Image (cartoon, rainbow, N blue to C red; front, side, top):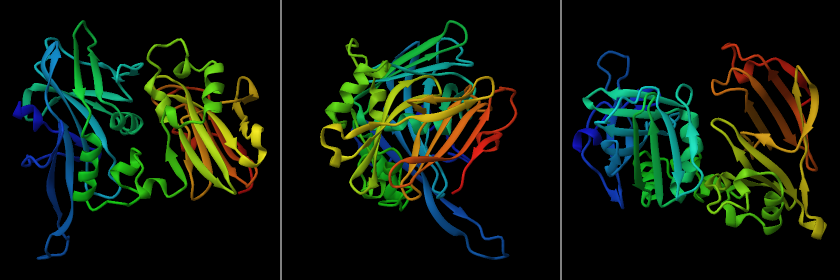
Length: 372
């Protein structure tokens, strides 16, 4: 299915516009790169070489409801370019307009993505027989860490009508393909490296400050706490615990303390985390559950024991959380906390309860601002 393999895929601001010769293969994934040159605006100036645009493409897989399905992770050579994830479907039996997407790794609980903010469906520009299902930048960043860990990705694409496509893609080799893209783009051991963005233990990603932790790497005490709480991804009655538990991370806070941010539940656009501080000096009572304040105009200030869509900046020692009111991200709450050596202190909180299609998280009304 060469036509599908060479289908156009978005690179954020750029587009895969030229076919490239197949590069190295890593199990079921092949890396291809296209050299790009930027012209100097000065007359008669020579073109300036830039890192190539690259993609890691899976082998075509037999698909129910179509001839075949494949996946591709693409990334432009520009420093600010982000990885993108898309699926190409050859000759679906029914239209896939406004398709919904369900992805599951190794038989775990599916992650479901709705059309609009997270998923777009377009015909391939160079092959009318191919339909492309593209994930947003944010959705791709959330899902790629799971793909590098797994063995089989189960893909189900549900069209707005009765049409659907289902397939299983082999995942081994994807992490090595990411490393090859970093090598081709000169990003090895840099903070913006692809393997750093999706985790995997690279020196730049870890730096002794933040590490990606799977289910088995979480301390037994915290695993027990998560199972005792009402956390769907830790439901002890599930035969196949959700792979979303592997989106958890740990961060070095200094002085022997560790921040543990552990996935509790996930929806289409919100991932909920429980957070703990580990202090080895406290021996048996070494794990402290963190509580946070949140605000809604209709309720006021309340206390919560989870945060949503958590990120931690180890250089600034800053914790952020953004709970989307809906997929578009035009409403919700955004909080920022800084580590002060003994606790996290709120430094800013924004909230916008009305989902009216106007505004973005960084411009939500400020309901609290403290000293920095």
